[in-house]
Image 1 (cartoon, rainbow, N blue to C red):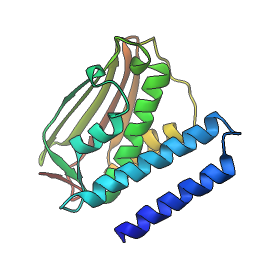
Image 2: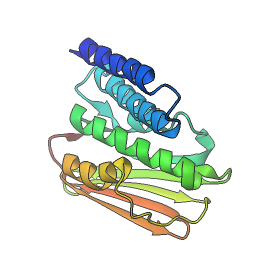
Image 3: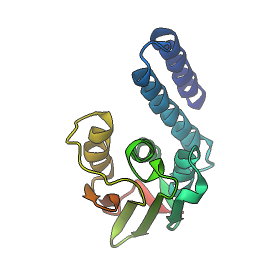
Image 4: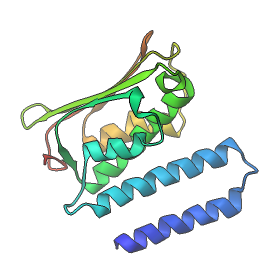
Length: 185
């Protein structure tokens, strides 16, 4: 099954390259970028010895294209089961992409702090906090990234996502109750 999924994603990427080429510019690049994020997340989920992927491993994979000095990452080991891990990786990819275009990652001195806690009592509390970038504001858009972050993530985690557009930068908070798709490693 793992091999089939990888082959399907490779085939979709090849079709996208042949169909979209370079003619659609940003749209083609965005599609390819999202598809590659999905493929990398799928690799993480299927390459682990256990059924799922560690939250920190997902974060490290998503932020790999950006300078490490622009990130501060803290949190305990948490295993996300495959479906939740894939949704989380795609949501994080959208946050990182937007930060690179409009937020903290677009400035040399910008920093993204990523922090999470988990307990059986309180569940998951995940925070993405940008600082040192340009002033950000809510676009009001309903594009793929917005829908993924504001609707898909809360549904997959049975939780809530709050986006705060502060003068210092974007803050995205995901809270979710403890449940079987979240477990300490």
